Each structure stands twice: as structure tokens, then as C-alpha cells.
Length: 463
Image (cartoon, rainbow, N blue to C red; front, side, top):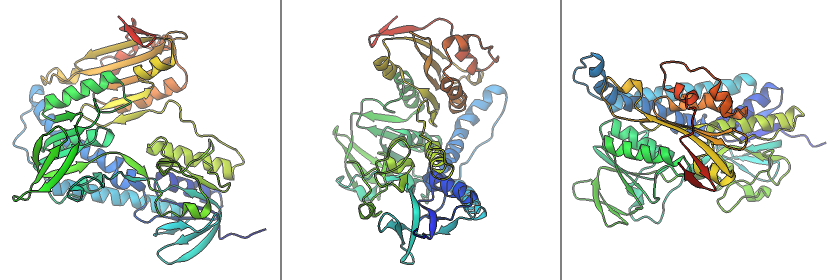
């Protein structure tokens, strides 16, 4: 029997990789883990966590305005970007320390280095040129920013990575993209007082989300003062004499801004990983191809998270990592469950959603009942803010099962997490109807919509 240095070696120290390494080590397995940047991955270091802290910071400008309607007199306010950056960095460092501590306490050996595959059982630790061997290997290197190399002036732009470390807050910014990152940062920068423009090649922001929410959020963002250009892309960026950026768009517009941010999604971070040395298969996007158990075409090599380019969400990577541990070390082959995954967009107002959108459900089911309410939430009544909230349930008419739930408004993400439990359990609209409301709350609308707003039959709305 071949003796390996490790029972399990993890390449990548993000949420999925760390979870797998820590749990496997706690089971007594000899575990090594390598990370070339910082432990915690995109989510903790330059993604979800710092972004949410920025979101909180950007809310205060509206909250100061709203306070007057509730009897508060708020004095002159001043925002300091450097303070936010310093405090964010301190929190990120604290969290990274916890990730490292968890690994060390479990007995995993930590390598602060890039690691690449030499073959199906050997890994090269780049910082020391050391080669180690492992019985089982997990690839958990996540994704990286999708750059636009063909764009003239691309080197003058930033990505979300750099947005977390800008020395100064720009007075104006143009953000390219229409997904989570672009929409969230557009709201963040606008809330911090930056003149913000969003440019997106598609017909509407947030592709694949429910259309009613997409359109309402678009309209609300524009009412706040965010400029949104759809059906357009950036074609050229040049530095002008005054050190600002001159931007040309495909629609013939010429924009002058202080900063251009490209937020065009993320792609699997597989370049230079040595996958070909081990014979690990990838698809046309460079993503590692895996089966239902996260196993690659090489029997002892597994992959989880964004590197597989399936569902780019931190909790999904963690769930997949736990399935790998169950399969490999607990004699319990476990498939990942990717059904009914709740998600949120921390826009302003935010979106929380779980299950199928109306359009997606219409393609799957013959007839739908759709329950929808649009209203001004109670928190906006005294402030005078006209911002609307939407609650929407998509129901399969044949069995009354709720197959989609969508919310636009305050705390939508929190509500989506709880709704995910109900939808995961297969609850029907009758179950919702039998549930007492908590009054007064915005969430009570979800259990007080007794009559369908409309039906969808053969893909067509029937009022």
C-alpha cells in the first residue's frame, strides 16, 4: 500500500476549502491546505463580507434623511472613506485569523503558498518548490474577476477587488455590468455620495431574477439618482489631461468620470493549476467538471465551489465541501442538493428570492397562480419616502405548491432565508394561508394574499 504524506490535501483556502480541511482534520485525517493569498477566500476577504459592511455604511445617508419624519433632528453629517476602509480591514483580518485558528486547532497543516498539481497524487508547493503527496485531493480555488482584455484602456479600470482598497472615494464612477456585483456597488457608491452610472449590455439588470423585481428596482435606483444605461457597453477608456477618464460607449455616448469599475462576473480560477498534469477535465469555460458527488473524472480528485462554475454562492461551496467529507471519510456517499437555494441582492432596496421566477416557472408548469402585493412599507410612511416594496409568491396551480418566493424591500434577504425552509419542505399555498400573520410587519403580506393577482397559462398572464 502506498504511503502518502496526507490523507487529504486541499488546494484553496476559501469557505469551501477551509470547511472541508477543518472537518476532515477533526476526524483525525492527515490534512494539508494551501492558499496563495489570504484564508477566507473571495467571500471573506474581498466579497460578501466587506461588501455587506459597505452596504451598511451606504444606508446611513438615507436613514439620516428619514429620521426627520420620526422627530429627530440630525446635524450636519460627514463621511470619511479612510475610516470605513480601516475598520473594514480590521474586521477582515479578524475573520481570517479565525479561519486559520480553526484549521490549526483541528490539526490541519497550513501552507501560505500557491499549490499546483504535478499528477493525480502529487502537489507542488510553489513557495518552497516542495512536492507533497496525498491520497485524496480537493480543488477549491474559487473564481477570479472576468477581465475584458480587448477593451481599449482596460488597464485604467478597476474591478471589485480594487474597489475595496481605493485610497480615496471618487466623485463619480461608471460601473459596467448588470449582475449582483455591479448593482450592489452602484447602490453602495451612490449611497456614499458618488455620482453613479451603471452600464449594461442586456435589456434589464439582474438577469434570471423575477422580472417584476428587476423592473421595480431599476426604476427605484433611477429615482434615487443612479443613471442606468441598458443595451450599451464601454468601447474605450482614455486618461484625459485633467487626470479623469473619458469613456466612449457603444451607443455613441461620451462620459467623463473619476473611476471606471468592471463588474462583468467571475470565471473559474483554474489557469496554471496543473489540471492537465493530473488529467482533470474542464469545460469550455475552464470550470472543473464534476459529478453529483463533486468527483472529477480522476477518481481521487474532487472539486467544490466557484471553480466548478455551477452556483456561485458561498453557502453552496460549504455545503458541497461537507458532502465531500461525508462521502470520503464517513462512508456516507452524499450528493449536493442544489434545489431551492435562497439568495439575496443587497441593493437598495434589497432583493431576497428563493425558487423559480415567474418566467422560469411558466416554462416548467402548465398553469400558475401568482400572488403579488406592491405597497409602501410602514417604515417609509412617516419619513415620506415613496419607495415601494413587493412580495410575490409563484404557485403551481396543479398541486398548489409554492415554487417561488420573491421580495423587494427592507430585510428581504432575511425573509428569503426563512422562506427557503418552507419552500424546501414543499409547503403549499394552503399552508401559507393557514399561517397567522405577525402584525404589523411587511412579511405578513406573505400569508395574507388569499386571492391570486393573476394566473399564467401556457406562458401568458391571464388577469
